[in-house]
Image (tube, rainbow, N blue to C red):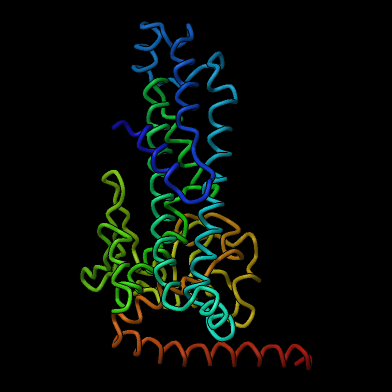
Length: 326
């Protein structure tokens, strides 16, 4: 079965109607472009291929119909995925009164199976849309003898609408492994075909073999302290660091938090600006790492506790000095 038909079948199988990539309509756009005089000339195509020239302004696809349409669809898909993943994980991490309310509402143990099914549907939704975006951009480059498709993909990453870059996908992978660890939730094994936390020379990597031979490998080594991430946070650009390392990189105190970071502060890896205020804590990943390496986690927790007390003390002493004018 061709990918287009497989994609449509997957989207129809979803319980609710969700935003999707209009792959069939976008292919029709590309066929129209292929039939246009500027694309059908063999001599022009050979010249464009040899000189690596971009498509000219006469192309009806490049003049503002293909890429804006795909951009809107990608934004809708990622926004929907992030929102639904957030709600799902909030249910799993619920505590106190909220937990008991959910328990009675979902009739106890049945809520676990429901969470697993929703997680499986969300991951399928994310991956198949990522494959659809990759294939349509590859087709665009093939027809136009250009690299605009790859450039658009890089632009999508900078705009945080690349779905494989979403921190919620990492959280869902950790969510699955946390459920798999629980003896009560054997049905969680069906969520992914192959998902594991691998330690290579004490460097942890979250790996998952996904739809259409895709593989996602997420490094869990903090690029600042060069150690396993502790109390991990994901910046809006998708890079993961320790919380204390993030505060240090953003030049803020742990009392003020990352939301108080200057919008001009840059990610230590990709150098994008305004990535700290929207950082999110990866609670499921934090749970997974704490159970996977308990001895290291206990030792790191003691060191972090001492460091946080010291930083908090320095912060309030500086505030007192400023207040007293010393």
